[in-house]
Each structure stands twice: as structure tokens, then as C-alpha cells.
Amino acid sequence: MTVAAGRLEVETPDHVVLRYDLAGAGNRGFAAVLDFLIASLIAVTAAMILLLLGAASPGGLLLFSGLAVIVALVLIWGYFILLEWLWNGQTIGKRAYKLRVINEDGSPARFTQVLIRNLLRLVDFLPGFYGLGVLVIVISPKSQRLGDLAAGTYVVRAPRPQVDWLSLRTFTPLGQGRSAETRRLPGEAQRLVREFVARESGLAPADRARIAAIIAAKLRSYTVEDVGPVDDIELIHAVARSMRATGGDRG
Image (cartoon, rainbow, N blue to C red):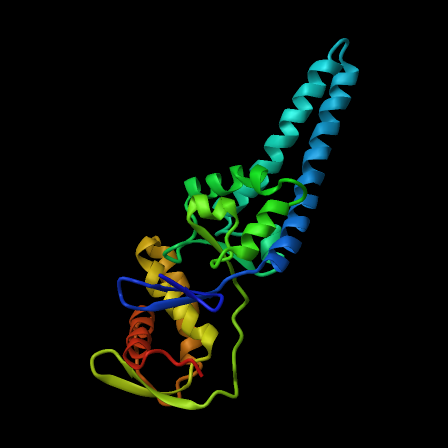
């Protein structure tokens, strides 16, 4: 793993290099504001319901007031923890600003990492809204806040794939010594290939086949001559081998 010029580069065991653009303090700040607004709305709604229940119960207002505070805090922290864990490293705010939390090997952050980075939000929040956290992101060479440093996570840009229809043509070998002339794959298509090869071992067979079919359909759209009945997964592996042999097309 290397970090240079705001870009995280991870080499997989298959010697495929995954490249991620690190997110800066700006977009992360906007995403955090949106997330806190949503989480606060959820927490306040739950707290109000509890207070209304307490007001309707004789002598129960004090008890329900304390419970409302605890529930509100749990909901705010739970919002970040559960979404980042179950939603592939994204919250609503991160998805809106095309950001994602990843592990240092490029895979989605594990639950323990998500838990650690979010528990430390209290420290990053000091002395005001993410004051310390923003300062650490700015001075950190890897754009990490304290929670990221403790958990070993990174926040990267995760834009939607864009197809470049004006790309030039190149020559890509396809499995078993076969080859087909293809239009040069745009950067996002290459990223999809790299990420699939890096993460396919952790996918269930059904998910592996489904995702491979989607990526292969995009790759076949660049094929000029008929390559025959090539399996979806083999097609992706063949393109990955070609990219690895040529060092990847950065053009």
C-alpha cells in the first residue's frame, strides 16, 4: 500500500493495483453535516415519542427523560455504525457526496473498524463540530482523522462509473492465448475489473456470478470482433491479466 499525491494505491495478491482518490476535509465535512442532520432528526423524533409517553405516565416524566437522552445518543452513533457496516462503507451523506470508507487493503471496513472509528467521533468532534478531526485530516498525509488512524481505515472517493465512448482502440488478450480487439477501457471500467478480482474470493457464488455478469456486459460493449462464448468471470480475469501485463491503461 502506498499513498502519493492524494491517491491510495493497493496491490492485491493477484498483483492488480487498486487506485483510490482520498477524500479531503471539504466533501467529508459536507457529508458529515448531512449525516448529523438525518441522525439528529431520527434521534429527536424517538426522544419526543419517549417524552410524550413519560408525560402520559404518572411520575414517569423524569424516567423517560433520562431514557430519551440515552436512546438519542445510541441512535446517533448507531446510524453511523450500522450504515457504514451494512452499506459497504457508506452512509446517506457519504453516498450523496460519493464517498466510501475502506480498509487499508481496499476491501470494505470490518465491523470492528467501523465501531472504533465511530466511537472516536467524540474526540474528533472537539472542541466544536469536528474541529480536531478536520485539523488532523488536513495535516495527515493520508487524509485520516483520529478515528481512521485508530481503525486503519480510509475515506475515498467513490464516483459512479462513467463510460468514455470516444476512447481509442487497443489489443486485449482473452484467456487461452485468444485475443480480441477492444476499445481502450476507461478508468472506471478498469477500476471495476480490479475491484472484482480483488474481492471475488469473499463473495457468495450467486453474488459473484451476478456481479461478474454486470461487469462483463460492460466489457463486451468495447469488443469489436466476436470473441466467442467466453465465460463472464474468465473474461474479467483475461482483461485483468492484460491490464497487469501492460501496466494498466492510464490514458
